[in-house]
Length: 99
Image (cartoon, rainbow, N blue to C red; front, side, top):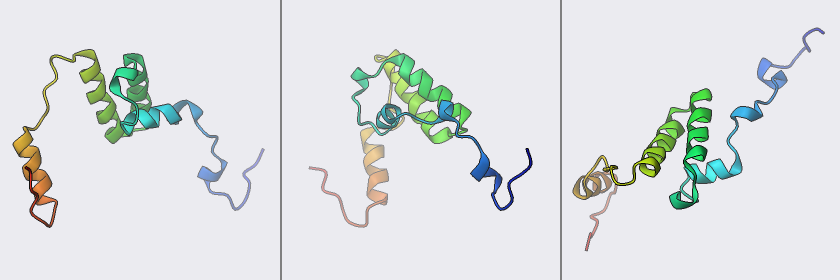
């Protein structure tokens, strides 16, 4: 079977359904599903898929969710509330009233 002329290789590639995120996985990554309703095995599957896709952004999200789910009393945020507020204020052109 020869190459079909005029088609780039990605137009001929077979879809890799095994590494596409499911609708539920995307909802989990977008925080549309409460973490209490997500099993750790689902988060492990998302991490594995993100790694296969070389999707470091979603891998980090899934890894953080996995750690929170697996060790709920050991998780500590990376930032304090005041640090998060300071970062948000630098991204906002107006003065934020935090009261």
